[in-house]
Image (tube, rainbow, N blue to C red; front, side):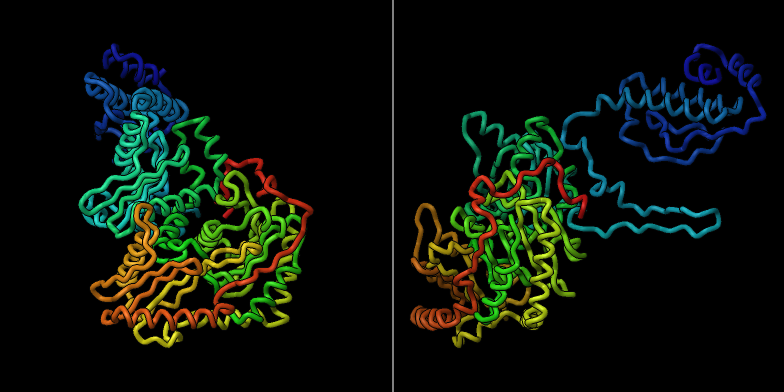
Length: 605
């Protein structure tokens, strides 16, 4: 009855309210207003009654009409009078107040709820959750534990600051409905309006039965890629061509597909076009961040090849034979890597006849392993999609490090999700064989020093090179590979490495130009001289000292090619082994379809 008097009988005078309050039960201790419920309309409650802690206004407490402030003031006076004139029980004074406030808040918040990009906020990216939180879980008197805020990252950058605009390259991922999915720098929520403009550009061009590909300004290139319901945008100030930036965006798309599959993403947006895909990609931001960092600094992404760990041919052959013997039904790929460099790989025979493992799929798999520390804890069994092999299905990957330093990693890919124990037994046989023959010690000792130095070539003017053989035997269909020495002076700093790879990107874009491709380029830069050469047998990019002449560069190339020919068995996997475990997997068995393709697997990591 007190609540009815306070909230619904506004026409009754103060004397009637006082008489009702005096007739209420007085031996019940007064319950203060719930401090977690902010006053509607943003008005402060009178402080002559019960002292209430000052609270920050929530978005739900905004005004909804012109007549609202006066009504809110009347309601607040009623609440204050009720608190001063009579005590309220917990059930009558706290729960009912919360219900009444929730009803009024729902009326004003219903107008604010929409399917815009800012509706579904992620807690980890909100500044509301970056404050220190004090938690006391023990009895009174115990010391409270203060939870420190997480350290600031590039995701906390102010998108209005000049430093955010000066980044070399931005990458954005959004849905067709304009929902933000990923941003390399800054919070996706703060960039929702920017992504809305991007989607407006895409939609405007599509309305004319066309598609937007790129926008050029004085110092920026904007490249758009649309893959199904996802739109990817790159804003770059580097020397990379439009084709190279488009390839990087495809890598980002493939990385997302490797976690969710293309079929599940398509099905999700067919059901709900404004679905927030970040719900399934929670925790994957660091994987995409690492991928974009590698794309800018690792030549394997530029050349579309994998880097092999330089090994003696006898040791590599022995390791391949060991993987070849440890097989089980439905095992398709056995891959041994060391610090993201390929040691050896074994493929199922019929898979090689059908198609091969693409370098893009291996890059994405190695990036996933390198970015997720959970893979270092023990044996991991997880679904993984290889988008270039089959974008709609999962393989089941067994991932385990073989040494204490987590440098040598074994990856076994199977099509049977119930074969964990049989695949784990293969790993035990491989590990036992490596320890018996001291192969693991040989790999670990070789990783303590750089792979090799450019001085081994014996050409003083040569600073660096990247070599990719193209004469791959058709009957083996192995992974495209490349080799390059460690970066040495003067390319020790990050800025100098970026400058060198910008030059490599420029030469690569000229060599592979769609309008005017070249076969030989001699380029004199400010601090070095570069030469790019493509034939039917190899693709080569070299960097020399700035004073080298064209004739001198040709002489160095001759010496370099002779050295590579001499060392090719140590630098490359020439004849990868293969095995047969199933009668005929064929194209229809490319990966295993998952029963719950919509569920990401980062919750288990």
